[in-house]
Length: 145
Image 1 (cartoon, helix red, strand yellow):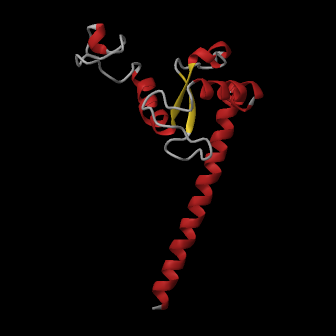
Image 2: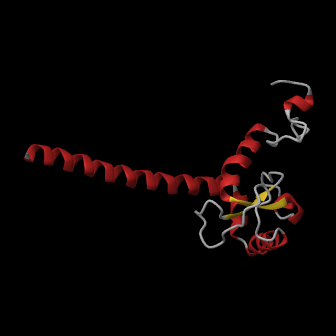
Image 3: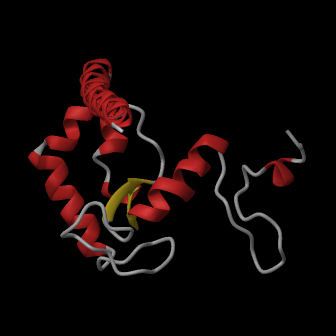
């Protein structure tokens, strides 16, 4: 019996050290990302916070994708308020700080739908006729890939 407990204790101990290593690696990765992309510091600026608040008020704290009411008290909530750049700024300060380029969305839509759209290069969705609404969709460009 003591042999099993000793083995279990060794396994549990190694799990704890793995979590500590992952946490350290995550912090290090974040630090490297901040250094490589100086524009990440813009998110901590008073100018951004003011602009973010204006976008949320303009959009009446409602997700512009799914219509849910946004939660501002818990950033991990599925309906947490996220202010998204409609056109990715990619370090362009003019696009970053342009209120017309911002939309209030929920965390769920931002982390799933919008990230997929950015990766694909076109918006996901179709009109009443069933055709894609984004002119950049391959069907609308006349290409399939």
